[in-house]
Structure formats: C-alpha cells, structure tokens
Amino acid sequence: MNSQIASSQVSPEGHLLIGGVDSVALAKKYGTPLIVYDVGQIRQQIRKFKQVFEEEKTSYAVSYASKAFATIAMYQVAAEEGAYTDVVSAGELYTALKASFPMERVSFHGNNKSRAELEMAVKNHVGKIIIDNFYEIKLLKEVLQENDSHIKVMLRLTPGISAHTHEYDQTGQIDSKFGFDLNSGQAAKALQEVLAEPRMDMVGIHAHIGSQIFELNGFEMAAQKLMQIASSWREKYGYTAKIINVGGGFGIKYVSSDHPLKPEAFVKAIVETIKQEAAKNDYPLPEIDIEPGRSIVGPAGYNLYQVGSRKDVPGLKPYVTVDGGMGDNIRPALYQAEYETVLANNLKAKEEEHVRIAGKYCESGDLLSADAFLPKTKPGDILAMLDTGAYGYSMASNYNRNPRPAVVFAENGHAQVVVKRESLEDLVRLDQSYQED
Ligand code: PLP
Image 1: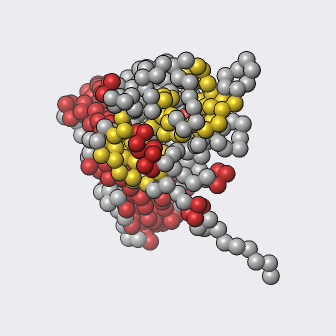
Image 2 (image 1 turned 180 degrees about the vertical axis):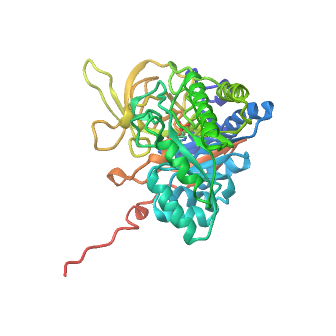
Image 3 (image 1 turned 90 degrees about the horizontal axis):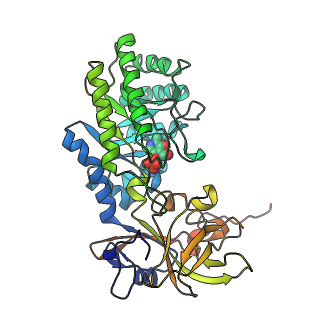
C-alpha cells in the first residue's frame, strides 16, 4: 500500500478515508472529479507552525498565503486557528470579507495592485499593505489622501537569495518581477519615500525566496539578510523595523523522493537566526512573520477521479483516463508537478502496473501523472491523487467548458460541501448572445 496513506485512513472494506469519511461514498454522493480536504490536517499544520513561536515566546504571525486555496470555508478555518492571511487580489480580499476574516489580520500583496484594489484594502482597513514597487507607493499615497486614511505598510525586498527549487517558483533572486532590489539602492529609496509619507506607518520588511523549499539554509540566509538590512537602516536612517517577514515556500511531500522538514524545524531555524542577529547587533527583537501556503493546505487535499477509458500503447505505459485533468489541477501540465495516486476503492489491492493518468481535456499535455504505479484498474474505479490541496482548485479553469468540481471539507467523520460543483448553466451565466445591427 502507498506509504503516504496511514493505516487509520483505510476502512474495513479497503476504502480511503479522508477526515474519517469514506472517499468512495463521497465520490458517489457528490460526483467526480471531487476535491476533498481533511480539515483536521489543515488545523494541525497551522498549529505546528505556531507551536515554536509560542514556545519561544516571540511575537509572530503565521499568515496563510491564501493564493494556495482561497474559499470562504478556508478563510473561516484559518481565522478559527488564529492565523493571519495574505491576499493578492480584490477577489481574495472579497472572499476573506465574506468569511468575516478579521481585516486587521490581512496583508495585501501583489506586484501590480490596482487603484481600485488599494482603495478596497484601505476602506476595509486591512492590517498591512506589502508594497512592491514605486508606482504603488504613489498610488497608495493618493488613495490614502482621498480617503483621509492611514495604513500600516511593509516593503517587499528581493534579497538576492534563490532557494533550491524549480525555476518557475523562484521569486527572491535579483532579476525578479517582485519587490525592491537592494544592491541598486532601490530599497533604501523606497524606505525614504515611505517614511516621508505620514499616512503610511512603515512597520517592517518582507522577502519571499521561493517555493517547495526543503532546506533550512535559504530561510536562515533570508532571515539574516533582512536583519542585516534592518540594522543598517537603523544606523543610516534611524528607522527600526518592527516586523521581519521571511515569506513562505516551506516544502511538502508530493512523491516518495521528497523529504520535507517539519514546520517546527523551519520555524525554529528562522527564530534562532533572527534572535542571534538581534543579539549581535543589539537590535530589539522584531515580530517574526511567515507566510506558508502550500504547506498548510497541500497535504490535506485529495482529488478524486473516476476511471473511464484506457489506451494501451505497445511497449509503452498505458493511458488510464479519468474524468478530470488540467482544468482541476494544472500543475502537472504547467510545470511537470508530480503526485502519488492510489486506488481509493481498493487500497489493499496490490500495485501491478505503471500507467500514465490522462485527463479528459483536449491537450496532449493533459497528463495528471506520467508514471503511476497502480493495481489493474477498470472503468468506474475511483482514483485519489494525494497532496493536491495547494494551487489546484485555486488555479482551476473551465477549459473545454468543463464545470469546476465541488469541494468538500471532511472532519471527524463528517463531510460538507464548501464549494458547489459548477453547473452547465453556470458556464454560460456571463455569456451574452450577439446580435448584428
Ligand atoms: N508569500 C508570497 C509573497 C508568495 O509569493 C507565496 C507564493 O507564491 C507564498 C507566500 C506562499 O508560498 P508557498 O505556498 O510555497 O508556501
């Protein structure tokens, strides 16, 4: 049996249990493709990130990077667990508002926030705007003046550290579309501009070095670098950063060759580095913020599919086709992301063939898995892809006019639909017919 499945997740009939609920029964009741989250696991991850901060008695914020999965129910769970959250668009902010997420715990990120988005953030009193560029400083200044308002801001910096990860996921290196560059003096100039603006309360600095990171090293370097910048700014400009935010990017296990560290290990390394740097430079210990996205929701998510057609190709791995694909999870097609898959309706069956799991979309690249080791499957079987909770549903599309799947939250043996399946009617809801004059 797949090593990523705990024995407690196997029902007496050999079905996969998610949050104590039979996944095969869920597939039958709500249809497939279906996205199911084990809510207990989401809570657990948030608690693990918080634990070390609590033990170390440091001021902190675990800010859930909601781009990984942004729905009303998810913001509610994050709020219940005392997490903060990052949003990157009016849509995410609107969803957080609908969830009654406490606005003072929201940070607004993004490298091209529109005036309307900044206005929405200011009017709703979000906790912080994480400023990304000079244009944004100017826009925000105007918006604050027009609304006679004040807001806390941070500066996003590109610290020149690129963590060991997939190329598309790197955002901390110098040649990045995000943030202010340090070496050219951009960051110091931004600081001066923000400090000169009485409506902006400059509370700290931020860096995000990449995604799916497995080593402590990158985070230690980023934390050290941010503390060094903070110290030099204190010396040069008399400015003391109250918050150091080292971003997200904590790696998770997708396949057996991934060996992620525990959330506690990442936090410990970050806290220790910042404490050491603070002691070394006689700097007041700042609040430490982190922004995990994938690591909070990724391992808790499962995509359930029903097996349909099969194509055998002489000498090559067969294609087993399912009723979903790149519309509900674009990551394999977009950057060859890999996942493990299990036969959810018979976990005890012995794996006996390597297959390719094809999606139903009209793209040759629509392969959910290039190599899945599975028992022999038949039409109607239910496959569960594991660890699909991050950047799956949030990047879902209606390509080929397929409705997006429903999302179910399962916890303590109970399941609840938290996002309805789109209907065919939903697909044409915004369409207008065309009449020639
Ligand atoms: N913070 C920022 C600024 C990001 O850009 C991202 C992801 O792109 C995250 C946090 C979350 O990263 P992850 O989901 O890998 O933890």
